[in-house]
Image (cartoon, rainbow, N blue to C red):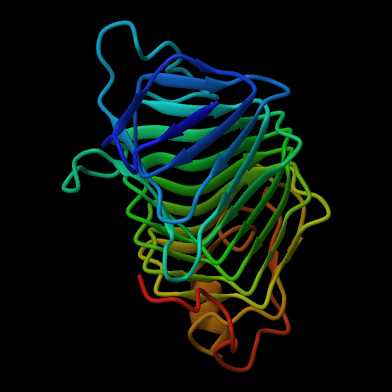
Length: 274
């Protein structure tokens, strides 16, 4: 199946997608669009995927693990590989819309979800993985309620910029590798809600969080290693003031941040200019 907007103008997509699907140009999503299990979606560089407000009956799933607003629900495979010169955009149809104006790219049991040189904005939870294998690199997440959110997902997140989100990264369970990213000017940079394990979060620049740099939820009694990250300072008191963990609530674990990176991590964040 080919769906492209290069020659015929924007393409409006709704309902279900099956088989091999190719997107290019401008794609408009209305309501909850589902890529079925066993299918594959390939998105070309420079494609703009815009999420419109759903009409009556189009927003079929609104309760967690879904979200209110139009969503792209991936049960098969997705490969969205832009370039530095032609990134792929995922955003609301209205460029002035507020964060939370569309739901999510919801990965449900996806065996392969690849996002490179992509730009995500104005979502509730821009990239949400459950029981999936997700690779996200060289991408920008800005002005979302949550940038990257996952549950029991194998995640590699490397060389991304996450800025001005409510929570840049939020997760429970899973075995994430989160390295060489820049998390800047978010309300919360990292929010761990439940029982993390096999976590590797290091060599990131975590800067200017408006509320906390790291927040532990009620189901995180474990200490969590986050060494070799740069927190914008080398002052232990200032670094620790940015943690909501066992230093504030005795029943929670503690962020094990030592040793911190001695200065800004070279090469962290995106190398292209938004």
